[in-house]
Structure formats: structure tokens, C-alpha cells
Length: 111
Image (cartoon, rainbow, N blue to C red):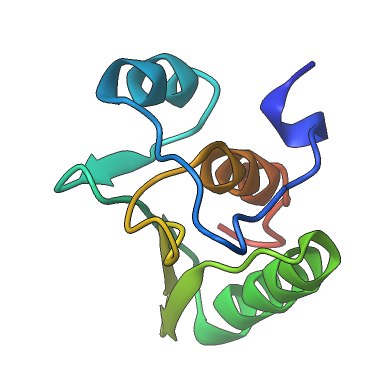
């Protein structure tokens, strides 16, 4: 099953973080994500204007609510930045990678 088709299972009571080699293997299914400090996933999307960035972010917010798992987002004129990690574990879990894949599947209206 593709990552984007999985259901996020957030770690509410801790859980285990992924090993570096597991993260590296899963990154092959993602678009332009990077691992920062072995702690979180990061991606920057660019758009032609603020309205397009905000429209994408609103769709991402709906997805996060549906999955019960949320990234940290920054939005500004022409960009959205995303950081994802599981706060309870202090690192990257499978749910984080699944969320990243689901965010990748949101088609931007103007990127």
C-alpha cells in the first residue's frame, strides 16, 4: 500500500521513532522532503501569490483534521513551509511520513 493511502496513526502515548535507514527508504515515496537534525521532516512549497498558498494550506488543514495528525505550518506571500514530527516521541514516526505523503497528494491550485 502506498504511504498516501495509509491512515495516520498518531502516537498519543509515545511510541517509537523510525531509524535513519527506515526514514531514508520511505523518503523515496515523498516529494522534496528533507530530514532536519534527525528530528523532523521539512518541505517548502512555493506559489505565485499569497491566496494560492493560503488555499493550499486550508486544504492541508482539513486533511490534518481528518487524520488526527498535524504538522507545523508557516505561510506567507508565495510559500508554505511544513515541519512534521511526533511531539510525544521527539522524532519522526511512520504517522509523520504518512502525513507527508498525504500532503504531497494535495494538488496546488497554483504552484
